[in-house]
Length: 216
Image 1 (cartoon, helix red, strand yellow):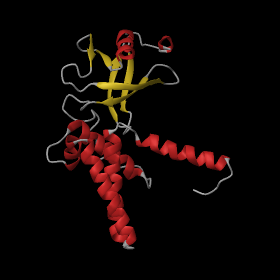
Image 2: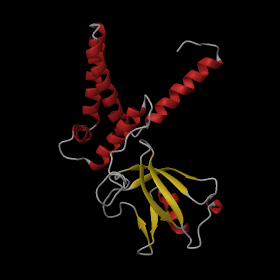
Image 3: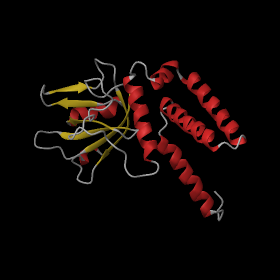
Image 4: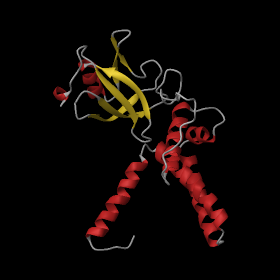
C-alpha cells in the first residue's frame, strides 16, 4: 500500500503522530520512502530530518521510542496519521506532546460534551505516564506498577459499594469519581484505550438490539 502514498517534490510526506490511547497529537514530523519502510519493518517510528538531511529513529538516544499501532493516510494520500504507544515524552523538551502551548496563552478546554472530562483525564494520565513528574500521584501509581493500581481499583470499588449501601449520594459521587480515575490509570498501564471499552459497549448494545432485547 506504500505505493499509494504521494510524496512531495522533495520526496517527503508529513506524518502526524498520535497517541493511540489518549488520542493526543504528539508531534508532526516527515517521512521519506526509506523512513516509512523502516517504520513498517521495525514497528517503531523513523523519520527524515529536513535540517540534518538524514533518517532518525525516535527514541534512539532518549529511549522514548514509539511503538506503531497503525498507520493511516488521508483521502489525497499525501499525509500520514501514525498511531503509536509512546514509551516516554514525544517532545525534545521533555513534554508529553510537542503541542503544549496555545497562541493566546489560554489553557486548552475540552469540547462542550458531558463526557469531555473523560477525554481530558485520559490525556492527562497519558501525559503523566510519559513525563513522570515528581510529586504526582499518577506518577506514583505508574512507578509502583500494576499490583498497586489494581489494589486501588479494588479499594475504590469497595468504597463505591459502601457509599451506595449507605444511600449517600455525596459520598457515592466522590467514590465513583475515584474509581473512574483509577480505572483509567489501569487502562493506560495495560495499554488498552478507553475507545476499545466503549466499542465493546456499543457492540453489545448492537447485538442486543438486533436480538430484539431492548434492555440495557
